[in-house]
Image (cartoon, rainbow, N blue to C red):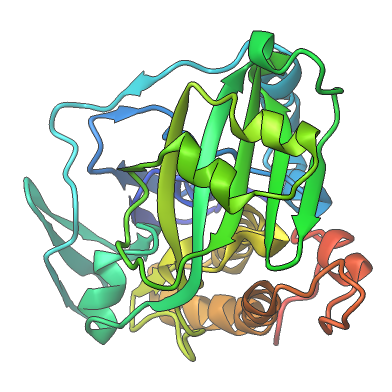
Length: 337
């Protein structure tokens, strides 16, 4: 990536999740002026871990961030970061001219050459583009918890997945090995609250994992706090934007967690967005955003489908090879003409 020799692009990024933050870093690396807006007043963990497969770490390496991310597992974990008191939250409306787009946020109206909606599964930018869309309930509920090391001292320093028919539990170490993060997906077709913050009960989880081996049940019962959320996704979008507005990450391809690629796809999006906008003037923005979506939609749609089918790495053929998913570097992949 290289800084432009013309006036830098002005970009607004809505959403400071992993995709929005990565896009901000990548766009600033090509010389863009980027302003990021987030509704949360502080950036702190919400109890869910992120698995970073080789395609995700390849993206971080290209951003110059991999060496800084590694210590979050093996060194000192990051603390909460405060957001400015004037940070706006969700997008309310937008309007566009031939050279800019104005995004109406609760505390300001921001006019920029580009608006990127990285505001997650409940994206208001997506809704402003395409209207409200119904999420698809998988019939599964995820229990997510973090256990302090002294409660799981016998668990080896590895990631593991425990399967039992139509349910499973995955765990891996976080916070420099001081905590064990786990997620268990179990059937519960009658429950449909679309929330990440609902409280879960350990007794319910242990009942759902009845018959699992003792090491898995021990992990499930060791969490200091437990959250429960219904697992939803949405069908792939045929287009990701309009004019000078585009989407990124869960805003355009929210997927179920069974391939652990939600964060990876968002990171890849950020890399491609920067690559497509590198060296572009304001007049070329619309074509560049079209190229970006054209480059990303086939891959993200395939991974969305693979995650929904929940056949990846199983004996059944998911249609996706580990090499195609993991041995992918968004900085080297071909761009469409």
